[in-house]
Length: 464
Image (cartoon, rainbow, N blue to C red):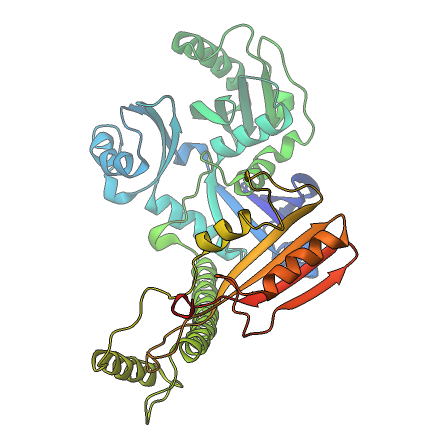
């Protein structure tokens, strides 16, 4: 992406092309063009426009057309600050608020206090600025201001400095800005009738800044624009591209998009192409939401169909036989079938046998723990034979529509024996008449090395 800063001078306009690559931004090219149709063609022949890559054009209001003040408000929430700000500005603005474009920059100081830097300009000034750009067939995405641009330029080139004093001289105007880590502390613009006024005005500014406590003897300063005519006591920071400081700073301000960025193109001054881009973004977002809703709807339908299928399979396995003319293919059919089953259960003449008439798990475990083939008379476990696992299950039980179905239980046992004789004794005991094993049914027995598996049905208590 390219950020292009455009600074209007008297007879020329300066252009700075900055290229964003990953997380860094570099100066791609710098240009000074006169106000001619050929220059407009040259401007749009720059690589960013020819390659078709995304570009962001930023311009700036002059320092003399910009009003800057700082406020400290005992508020934290942005909504409350913006609602209170109009009342605070009534006594500060040198013009009516309805005639102004205001850009408040919020910087939290602590949990209770917020510093608000108010940067404002007249709507008439902004209209004139946009009209001048329109003559060059330039429609900016962002309109900032010279103080903000000089602040960005200084902090970008000297990020290690905590405070910098900046002097910019061009078009017989001297702009003075004091900045501290992207924050504009003070801004003053003076109009000059002749260059021989510069030493006197600098001396006046030095006295003014020291009285305000904005700078001291240790504050470094830089000169931009026509640097040859500027001289000031103290440490001067040398920088490249000083002549293009404003255009570079405007591009940097547009690139930053942080709480210190200035944007006067708001409300009725919002560019048409910006509105169209926002509209396209909103439509894309709505389309994405619609697609997500469609996918969620399809996913929900598939999940619901799966749950319905599992429910039908469970009902078919638990509640048989189905009532006449019943259907489980639709939700209405399932509901009607359940109602029919409910009516059928209520019309049963005899109640269900809720208590099984086969030995319970505790009965089987008690029988197994005292079995002569597995334990001694005193209850101690015999050595050489051990039960590894036991699985108890009901293979038959009463159901709705089949209340007379009997209970039938099955037990599966896995045991290990060091000697085949001990396992054979246990097998023979299972085949003899006893209170647990239903000897009328098959008693399964399998051998694998020293591991033995058996499965048998339980004898109903009534059959004892």
